[in-house]
Image 1: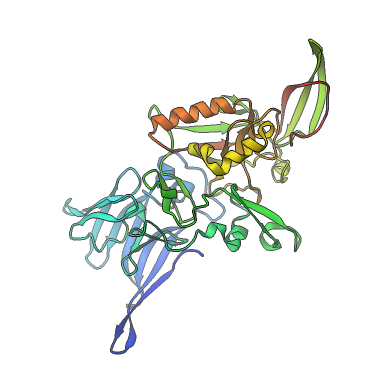
Image 2 (image 1 turned 180 degrees about the horizontal axis):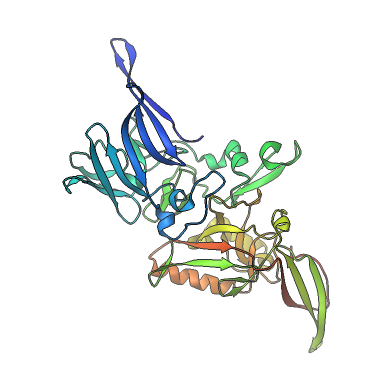
Amino acid sequence: MGRRVRKQVYDWISSAWSLSKDTKFVYDGWNLLLELNGLSSDAVLRKYTWGLDLSGQAGNNQSRDRQGAIPGIHAAGGIGGLLAMHDAGTSTNHWYFYNANGDIGQLVDSSSGNFSAKYQYYPYGGELQAVGAYATTNPFRFSTKFWDAEQQAYYYGFRYHKPKLGRWINRDPLLERGLILAQATTHSVVTATIPFRDSSFTGLPPNTYTAVRLSHSEQLYTYGEDTPTQRSDALGLQATPARQCMDNGNPVSLRFDGSRLGDLDGVSGRPIREAPVGERTIGDVRVITVDLTFDYTKTNQGVRNAGPIPEGHYWFDICSEANWSNAWRHILNTGAWGGFSWPLNAYPGTNTYGRGGLFIHGGQRWGSAGCIDVCGNDAALHETSERLRTANCGCCYIDVIVAYRDILAHKREDRFGGFRPGPKF
């Protein structure tokens, strides 16, 4: 699994297969830079120039990740980010123009200023219209992905999408054991828990079982969770809302500093210390006020099931709160999860230390196993999500920046009936 670096096409001629096309590919991250002709001493066929993709246009311009990729150019898989193409064979340059979902709508010849291609699409990427002298030659079209004419499918990096079928031609590799292991050090998790035993990626002793939960739909073959006009897929791994939530024309993002998520009180991780600081009586009920201390040091961020959410850049789908795979948590454990929760997903470059199951959620007491706990404020966040859902006419995502202001934070809570120390779960 990874970038395709070469494509060879054979034709059946005179009772034998004959190599008719040999194309080599050169990338920057997942963005294609060059097509080379392997049948002509690797002569350049086409060159591509990229700018900010949908992630960068929404304001995600943080520093390079550990592979050298720039999130603002690569985090959306290049969707909406292809600026221009140079065709070496015809010595022409073409500029790309898009619709709101990052699908290429028009190509313009830079010399004449005329349209060299125009496209319109069905929801799953089938072409309703493809006209112009360059419409067939241009390989980038729906979702800014490379069109393989030979198999009538779009190449997304990890798998191929067949527009006529409205689905992927193979199951989602996110649920394959090998990819889970490879991604375990960088990706946030939820939904399906899959046990494995391997020390090469997890750092655990051999034969030690652990689990990674995947923030992912269980519809393994469907494109965009069957809502292609509202969701896109950067690399063929995970459907995400096609756009960032907007509020009065501005992209919506939240910052969690260890004490507040936006304007809501919040904490993360289990408290490292609980100390009673006051006592009073309400009627016949004894009430103890407890001071809770939370440790946000880098060391503690890597502690599974106890440390706070690691610092970095995340996002959540406002519609994920209503997913059936998320609802059971509130039925089984309302005290710990509150009434609402939203799975968090890490952007490239965010080191989650192999941890997963990261959420924003409510609850009855401060503290979590690594999520952002807004305690009783989850209802307020739910109201905001519903308002944004209406304003944006459907699903969208909200960016979350985790950057701790202090290495220690304190919260106070009242406990009825006496002081009983212990973690939340």
